[in-house]
Length: 304
Image (cartoon, rainbow, N blue to C red; front, side, top):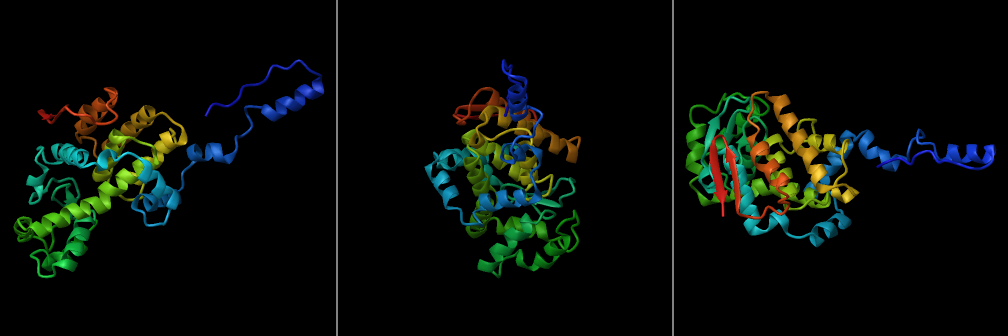
């Protein structure tokens, strides 16, 4: 927000001094105006996560979300979002072909598996198997739960090799485990990302930008996770809900998303931003209208 400039006064010296003291641009603005840029506390990251995951009852938030257009939550757009993520994670638009995928990419996150890349080193794969085992205690992955708890937070395969990958692929042939993957994707990633984006006043493209960033960085509150990334952006820009420009906010968000990716791993490819999301933003396609064309890793994708 721009500060008022010094007034040019034609008045008595006393009056001029009084008015200048009242409007001096060097005086700090009220905390409510500058607080969102000066610093966003770790507690606010937790608060944003709670609002996104609706773990705190917020009737006003519920009304905002209910009044917003469906956006990325509409069935066709949600499927498009999965295709976009699958093109970046699995090099395919057929995201349903990825239930049984499992591989260690050497990125320090252990095994990456399933439709959005649940990782053995980042807790979400463990959480998925725990939730699935509650409903299906005799599943082929349940015996690996102790090992998954031990390797969480590391890239270790200890206790998982040699049988875990085969068990994952076999279990992924079952409709129940496919449903479990989709349910965990929605619970931990898709629904919170779309909800928070709507609360921030973002349209369909912005909702996807949040979702993709949450998939890539994880739904945590540490500085390099999604909520830490959003915190950094809020120090530089207002969301549309705060009165800011949607395009300007998303420009900065994508810049920061890219920077955090590169800071974590300098040789990581950033085409998912540069050749897809940035392209859609520059085209002014805030509603993610199809047809869409983008290129990742030398492969061109088209959604009619």
